[in-house]
Image (cartoon, rainbow, N blue to C red; front, side):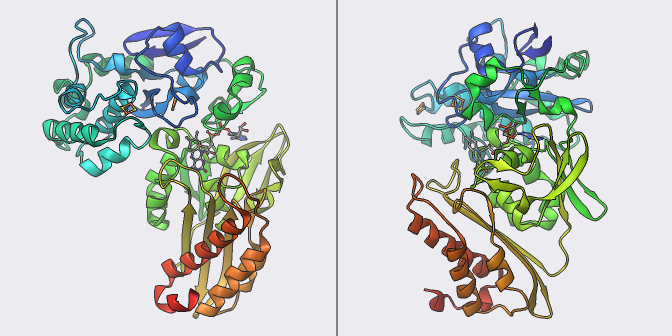
Length: 470
Ligand SMILES: Cc1cc2nc3c(=O)[nH]c(=O)nc-3n(C[C@H](O)[C@H](O)[C@H](O)COP(=O)(O)OP(=O)(O)OC[C@H]3O[C@@H](n4cnc5c(N)ncnc54)[C@H](O)[C@@H]3O)c2cc1C
Ligand code: FES
Ligand code: FES
């Protein structure tokens, strides 16, 4: 049995663990405020809050319920738009966010509004000192196709002004309850979730689900009929930590965890802005590192970044073994991995003093889009020369590529405009792009050239003559 709390009600169900949360909410529980739009994680109409017990606090994140299996909500609190009104007895009561949306004309078509309300609520739950820029980012996964965002942003500004900041020594959730931003029953959640046993019975695995953000887009009909296993039931770590001078990512760690990690902020500050271009917040809250690697998309962002960082993949099956990520892809969606092997973790060296890293992604839309072409570079300099170099490229071959020839060409050389041109020329010959919806083969070749120029312009602006590159 799967047990969780849906708004203020404890649910136990023997439905298949692969049942889509959105279907449970709408069809079983008849809570139709949560909408079904794209069913692919793109529109945000199905956004709900998922609350997990961490120590004695429940931490809430926004997720796309169309991509979440029921197994992932065991021992969690799920809040839908119906569960966010201040009083369940008086359905006319609105939260300050809902009131602001009404007052500022932000309801528009109405269909997408519940998703906006839930994402905004998630922002205020997670931010003690709200500001407009971050608040707007938090609704990046909620798409409006009818009118635009002006009224919605006005509503956000109005709510920020009304709620203000929580002082560090006061209880944030209590303050939000007092301000009617969340209902009183949220207060009881830690106690109620503690009463639910953590483990759900294991089932035979046809599919292994990480965050489900690839699987539930590509194969959801098969999944709901199958008997899939949820990856965390295998106790795969979701932590990022330093072990023996290496940065280790647990396979189940999410992209948002990478973005928020103090370790990553310290060693890869430039990744902060770049990872915000990975899907949307609700997608990043679910998408895992292992899922990105095993999905084997040639344009996976984390795969591209980790390839250039010379990462190792640690597999667990009947035995444990390690393989370099750059050797993990044998052909299109063909991996050097046995069916029963799991990605337990991924590790890489801690950068040294003279280490340089850059990541670039070009997509048709800046936000909420996968790359047309992406590329990363990592370099170590010694006495003015390149000691080690590793360049990766995505979207230019059937697999995520490590550009061996282009990387080797850089070794023992000083940075110069000519070297960058030679490197880009070699890269253009090393790839085999195809023409598709994301662009022609020639266009992708040119994109990669520009991204290689961009790496060096970002890292060594004074050593490159832009005029000579053109
Ligand atoms: C709207 C939207 C936007 C997106 N934007 C981006 C983007 O900008 N950049 C990008 O790179 N991707 C993007 N993606 C793709 C997807 O989010 C990522 O590839 C994500 O990292 C997949 O992780 P997951 O945990 O959800 O994988 P899942 O869907 O759970 O699984 C994917 C594959 O990995 C396997 N798997 C999962 N965990 C393990 C494990 N521990 N060991 C072995 N196998 C495992 C599964 O069996 C499956 O074969 C987007 C997806 C959506 C829906
Ligand atoms: S229905 Fe569009 S994101 Fe879920
Ligand atoms: S608010 Fe629904 S499409 Fe614009």
